[in-house]
Length: 259
Image (cartoon, rainbow, N blue to C red; front, side, top):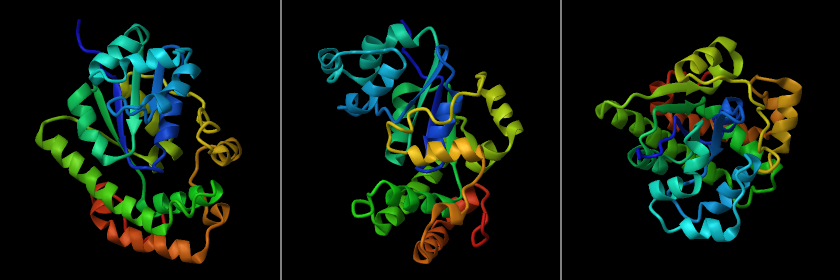
């Protein structure tokens, strides 16, 4: 039997809209996307199990534990092969340390690299951490370090894939959020339909504020006023932007100009 392979892998940077992209591509029962399942990093079941339940694939703790120590390809086949083989499926991760490993382990049919202007990524992190009460756990220095590491890693991943002759499609948040034609072009490229609920799983992820925003505003970038951020946070985001100039240039963003 051939290895169970995902149709789509989204190599993303956090706060780039990758959860929304997964959600609009999910059209049950024939198309499903998993959000950061970390299939190859036990104990993945803490992240994966609630998503499986929402997709009607419920397993008890003993079933999940029984496959935890298997190699990732065997785990997927044993636990999910019967569910996933008849349909289109994929997943996304948001750490550059995951991306090459996923490609090497699972050989996805399509690789999407999901990016966003780094200024807005930083602002989005600041807002998310404040609204979730996580500013002590994720201070501004954490946002800076994450953005520097992940932007460098994502550029390196794209360069590595190009050297290996592995095709990647760049998906910019600003395009698929605002342009229906960009969403259609992506859908046609993948051979997937789109139109799933953008709010799926947001409540489970403690991101109700985003669900309310999507319901009110649809597909558009969030303004500084709506984010309610301090002047200090905005300046810090600009500093991060300047330090991520390589990423900005690589993915076609201008630095120093408000997006």
